[in-house]
Every structure is written in structure tokens, then in C-alpha cells.
Length: 274
Image 1 (cartoon, rainbow, N blue to C red):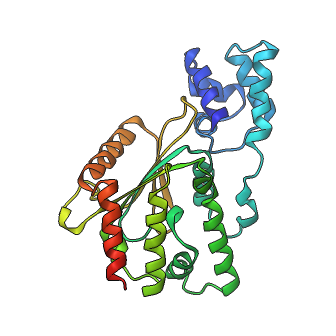
Image 2 (image 1 turned 45 degrees about the vertical axis):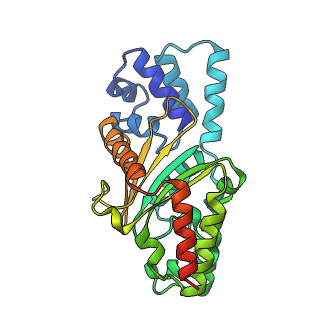
């Protein structure tokens, strides 16, 4: 993504069209778009040709960009789980691993980055009713592995969770109790913000359902809106779409209980769970 963003910036600075860039490397303009969004692998020869087209001829300038090619093509840690991951979710894994901030709204379930092992173990079979015990454990391990950046403080998560997700008894009473306790613990971390959207808030801005907004440390990278569906996902990066979802997320943050009040709500839910 960082490499693609740099290539897009260089192209736009020179006023070169995606069509012309594609012609230079014997490819279509759509491939240039995918390269600039970090959604396709890179060949060093292609990047070198594009740099020449964009007027980057100084070796000291070219070297760090070309060095990113090998890094961009390195498999992520989730490579060992690629038999479990559909292609559309592998894209998300890369985005999640590169993000510095993830803002998410969840309606039915606790967000994956905030789940306990037992909650995940109870939830995953709902989407995979024929799953074997071995595959279930690997999927739980994958979900827990994703949480390492959060627990290390490298990733900030701001989650708005509908009260419905807290009341849905996934895995039974003891599992839900441990899950709510986990949310209370996480809410005390500096890099985690949890807000509960209570039932009495009535109708709210996120009428279309759950979504996530991912932001990256590289200033030239656009935010990405992630919308997961049953057998696919949408990745939105157009400024108009991002602005719309950002407005909705900001409204949700105002309509939900504030972090301190949300922590109290979680404690009350915990009290009712026995």
C-alpha cells in the first residue's frame, strides 16, 4: 500500500494518466489502479519503468522505492492460514495489519479484535456449521493472532458496539460474562475506546449495518471503508464514500454512551449476567 501510494503520488505530480502508465508497462489502466491501491503484486521491472516515466532517475531516489517491491511481495503472517481465508478477506488482513487506527461499528456481535477465545469458539460455527474441531481451533488461533497488535499498543481501536451484541447470549452465560469482563478490561487501555449504543437511543445513523473505517500511518494513503458480506466484502476508497461513512461514524460516537458511561453499562450487564 505504501509503495502503491508513492507511485500514485508520483504519477499525479507529473500529470500522467493511468492509461499512459499502463501502456508503459504493457498493462491496462485498471492494473495501475490496483497497483496504486496495493491490491496486486509488484514486479521490479514494472516499478522501475514507471519510475523512469515519472521522471525519477536519480538512483538515490529510486533505491528505497525499489526496495519496497520485495517488502510488498513478502507474505503476511497469515500465510499459514491461507487455506482458511477467502481472497476477499486476505485483502482485509493486509489492510488491518497496516492500519494505525480502526474505527468499527458492530450491530450483532462483539468485534473480532475484542473477542475472547471462548466467545470466538462459540461464534465461528454459526458461519461454518460443518466445521471440524481442528479447523475451529485454527480459526480461533487466527482471530487471537490478529489481536496482538492491539494488545501491544501498535493499533488503536475505537469500537461502537450495539447493546444488542451484549445481550445476544453467544456461548451461554459464562462465556458472555467473561466476554463482558474482557471488554471492561480493554476499555481501560489507552489505545482502546469502547462505546455502547443503547437500545433507548432509538434509530441511529448506521441504518446499513456494521462497517469499519481503517486509517493508515502513511499520510498519502486514503482511509478504507470495509463492509463485510456473507460471501464477499466491499472496500471503498473514494473520497465521497469515505466522507459519508466518517460522518456516520462520528454521529454514532455522539449517539452512543460516552466511554465512561459505556464502562458503567458494561458493569451493569455483568451484574445482570450473574
